[in-house]
Image (tube, rainbow, N blue to C red; front, side):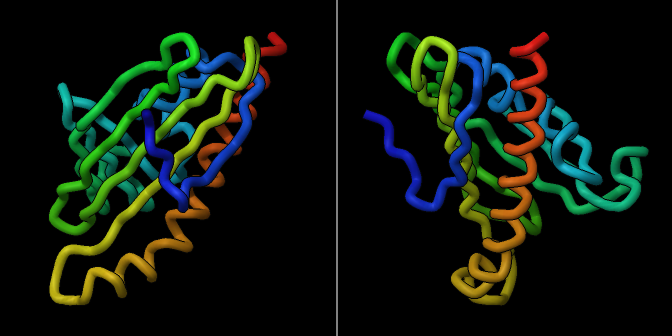
Length: 154
C-alpha cells in the first residue's frame, strides 16, 4: 500500500502512468519547468541549484537530495519516488507518486515538506516556505502536463 501525502499537489495527465513517470520522476527534466534552476544527478544524489544565473553555471541556493525510493509504476501499482533533502540550507522530504488512472491517463501527486536549517523553529520555516513551494510545484506540474499533452498529440 502506498501512502499519498495529504498536502500533495495533484494533476491529471493525459498519458499512461509509465509515460508520466518517465517525465516527472526523472528530476533532470525538472530544470525545464522550474525557473532559474539547474539540476545534476550523481548516482542517488540530486543537486538543484537555483538563482538568477544558475542555469549559466553560477552559484545559487543548493537543494541537495538523496533518492530514497524510486519504484516505477507496474500494472495497477503506482510509481513512487521519495527524496530526503539534506543540504546546508534546505531540509525535509519530497515525494512524487504516479497513479494509473486508465490505459491513457494517470494522476501525479507531488509533495514537498521542507524547512530551513538553522536557528529558527522548523514549524515557522515550514509555514514560510509552504506557499512558495506549493506555487513552484503547481507551476512545474502545469509545464510537465503541457509537455505530456504535446507528446500525446504528436
